[in-house]
Image (tube, rainbow, N blue to C red; front, side, top):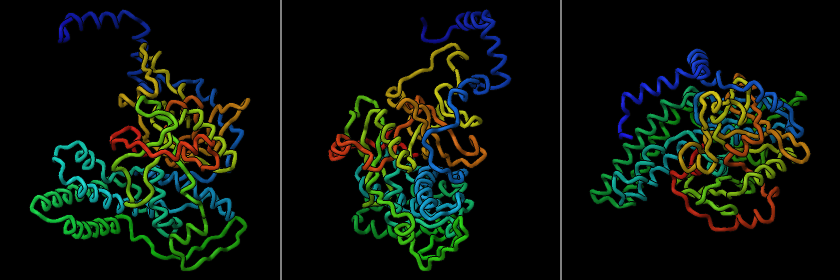
Length: 444
């Protein structure tokens, strides 16, 4: 076989394809209807009913619009679920995602500049420097990053800091923030080479952060330092609470000990043994805040922990590779959603470990599990609250088959009270440090 494709080989390929009437029929279908519509399974939605034996009372689905804030929406959805039921509020009550978004961007700016200062001795073409310069102001995040922001800044109702154009359409703001970040990185590296000390560079960093703060205020509005909380509950009872700080509000109206929640992951690759803990270098936002910490477990243990939390009437924050085998029209995540193998006459399969190792999959989106169907003591399907608005899925809700959970769910956040003694003991280990570009360093 030659290194190049011979024209006679092309002729043989064409003849082989056209000689098969079934392939030609598939070509007619796909060229007219597209791949997804041609491969969509009729039976998959029937095999995954939209009913669940354990289900938390649903709240109104919200929308992150054209932004990458799913991790913050998922965190706020978990917390507002608790608040709505505890304080008898209407299901359309929301906490402000824009408020946390503001502080996340400012903290990411500081984290980025501190990373620049800690890597001044590295070459410009170093892989870490390249990673920092391409990811610093991404919208995405992790549960532990959300915890760090909330513990420092608290939360507020959406009425106190509503959406703006840039919170719902973050692309232009992100582009300008990234430009400033790269400009600042060059300035700091140049000044270091000219002889400025780290103390002098940090003074300059403070001025840089003021510029970032100004951009965020213009784009997102100024976050409140104090506010009055006013609302009517379902029984029309009026609540007024004056002079609250965002931390006061979180402690009084939500009151969750976020340090009692841990991230369980399923990463079945050779470099990540089960019952081991991991962290990710250079990943984070709040300096001095909650560090990234994962406990890697077999997938069935993630399912068991998630089920226990749902049975305790508490939703589950989770991260997955949402685009894989996703049928938006049917509100379905299932390994049966599309039959690409039959349509194209070839096998597209890779196991979960290989998908991670060979860049086919990683965590891309955070959502909330609010229900599970248990049959003969086995989980069969899961109810998912998304943050893509009510025009997506079934009025914004999705159902996830149990086998899709096995293949594409990478993380669940669980209260420690639902963990086994073995899992709690494993959490005591010092974590193994992962490179920031490791698949488990991806941001939802």
